[in-house]
Length: 306
Image (cartoon, rainbow, N blue to C red; front, side, top):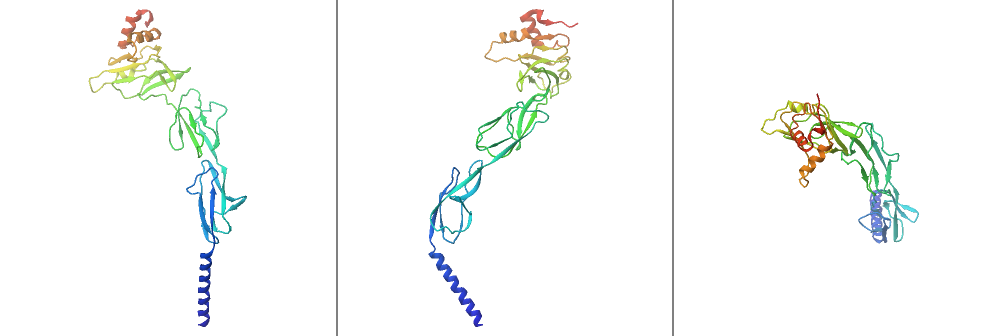
């Protein structure tokens, strides 16, 4: 019993002594040189032999290596043992990030392309890839974000990147299907839902639309609208050839030529008709085109098909 009481007394005395020492332990000021980084504070008070925890700074594109007192590393937490005010300096190393690609059968269009970068890299431009008999549409990154034909990675970016090439399927938003040859596009069929009008673009993904193939719009000849509007197809001025039977059976289709309201309609029509060859058989329903061609240029530019 006496031994137990003595042990309790000694334990209590030690605790009181330690508390007294803790209260009397000196306090020091720690300042931080974040060395180009960012942090919510620039100083911190610590007490000798007391527990401490140092803040962690951040620097874009860098990995934090720790705090240093001169060349001596200082633990981020523990019991303070430096008996003076001190300035700690943050040390960093560059983060290297990878850039990977899925070209879906294509190849890079340039022999030099980026496979990695760091925070010190300047802006990086990634060009469109190439693929025989295909037209590049756009890039998609690892998060599903779409880009254009080129991608710019700004200086100071972070993180590994992965880009997937998307190739055009040769069908536009109207359901018009194309064929690609010799750097130009030819309309070969209509696979969309019939609408009151279809506007043919003069170029798609930078490639000019120049021709309409035989039987291209035959499907429209069999389609019937549920209301009283006729179909209208707007052709661009880049069209140079309309092959025979392109609009065969399309009695319900009217064709016209795109032009801007600020331009003179007659001049636009004459310019377009001067270069376009229309094969007659099966295209009698090109109402605007045929009549304008006859009125503007006579029969010399109109190709008769037996």
